[in-house]
Image (cartoon, rainbow over the protein chains, first blue to last red):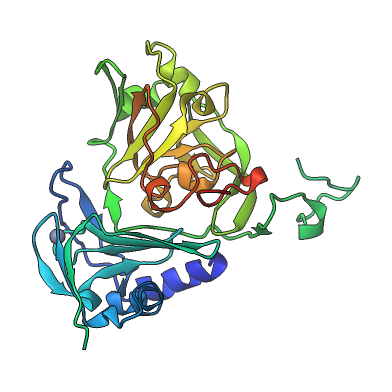
Amino acid sequence: MGADAEAGMRAAGAGGGAAGGGAVPGAEAVVYEDTGAYQDGNALAGPLSEVFGVDVTRAAVRCTACGLAGPLPGLRVYAHAPGAVARCPGCEHVVLRLVLGNGTAWLDLRGTVGLRVPLA
Amino acid sequence: MGIVSPGFHGRRRQGDVKLPPGQYLTDDFPVLSAGPTPRVGQDEWEFVVTTETGERHRWSWREFLALPSETPTVDIHCVTKWSKLGTTWTGVSLDTLLADVETTADYALARSYGGYTTNLPLEDLLDGRAWLAYRFDGEDLHPEHGGPVRLLVPHLYFWKSAKWVHGLDLLTQDEPGFWETAGYHDYGDPWLEQRYQGD
Ligand SMILES: [Zn+2]
C-alpha cells in the first residue's frame, strides 16, 4: 500500500468531489465529503472467498443501523486503510471489516444483521 | 534521530536512517481512510474529555487555540509500512489539556467525528509524547489528514493518531478501538513491530 495507496486515492478522487451530506445515526450529525475513495463490494470477493469457500459476491447483506438490505457488491469498500472497511451505501455505517495479516483473517460482521449466501 | 554524515545537509537517503523493522521511507504523505472524510468546521469543533466519573471538560476551537502551542518535529510510522521522517506539526500538548483533569484512569479511548476510535494507555499521552495537532508543515491541517484537529502520538503506529479527534474517554479498563477490535495490536509499538494481535 503506502505510496500506491495515495496514487490510487488521487485517481479515485478525480471522479468524486460531490458533497455527501449523510448523517450517522447514533452519532452527532456529521457532514461528509464524498471523495469517491471507495470501491464497490466486489473488491471483497477474493479475500472473502478465501474465508468462506463460496462466492459471496452473490450474498445479500442487511445493515444493522438503517436496515437497508442489498447485494454485497453494493457496499462501499474503503481499502486504503489498515484493513478493508465495507460501509452501508445508505447510511455509511460499518457493515463489515476484514483484516488480513500474519496468515490470519479477522472478519468483523457486527454491522450486519445477516448474510444470505446462495450455496448453489 | 537519523545518522547524517558531517557536512551532508541534503535529502536523507534510506541507508542513512534507522527505521522500525519492516518499514520503508516515503516523502509522500499517503492518505489512509476507513471511511468518508467528515467535514467539521472550526466553529462547530469541540474537544471533550470525559473522566471515569463522568465529569466533562470541554474546549471550543477558540478556547483550544488560546492554549500554549508547540511545534514538534517527529517521525511517523504507518502500520501499512510507510514511514515519514521529520514531519512538523503545530498543536497543543495533551499535558496541557489534561493538566487540570482529575483522574485515576489508566486508559484512554480517543473518539473522532465520524465514529472512529482508538485506545491508548493514558501515560502514552503524557510527558510530551502526544499532541492535538491543528497545523501540518505550517498550514492548517487538511481534512484528508484529519483536520481541523487530529491526535498526534508519533511513538506508536499512526492509526493511534486519530484523525478528526473529538474527545477522549478516560477509563479504568482498557477498551479496544476500531482497528484494535479487528485484529490490530492493542498497543502498536513500531519498534517492536506490534502490528497484529499476537505480535
Ligand atoms: Zn445502513
